[in-house]
Image 1: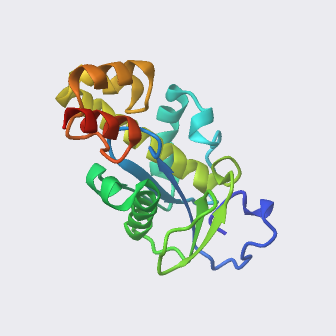
Image 2: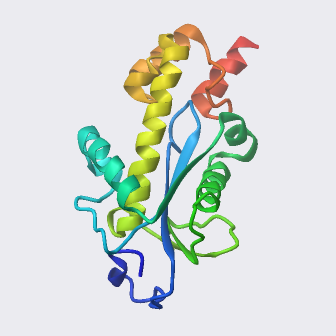
Image 3: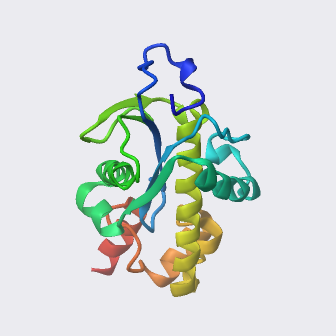
Length: 206
């Protein structure tokens, strides 16, 4: 099997022909920026030490693991859904869209997707939701790391366009600093207008 920790789940398919990808997203909670997702098919002959939920790793550790994942995996892909898509679809459906895009972008077509969480995007291949999968299944952990680091890098770039919001510090999350800058400058083009703190400011300005 193309995942190192599938033995944790007795109900998962055991066929050696199964091509399994792990899938996770990053950025559902922030008030600004896209939501990112990644899909990874690991190579069991090239194990990667230290994989776990990206939120439980330091930034330095995540940055160290990213090139290892990209070099050692059989396939990997990163995708996103924009702020406009988040506002149009809602954040859950936009996250599902980003995950589906990541799976469909893989250079190797998987036969099974293991999705972190309790919901699966609608896809052509079989998928299984694994609650807490980003700290249980190595392929999902790897996807978690790629999605998190890609989104953080994107928010640093947004900081260069909109330095007054300090996106490089809070990555779009609703911190005290972000809320203070949001009140001072109003929503930027990359803020999610459907999210309550942003929507409230837009309503006041009408």
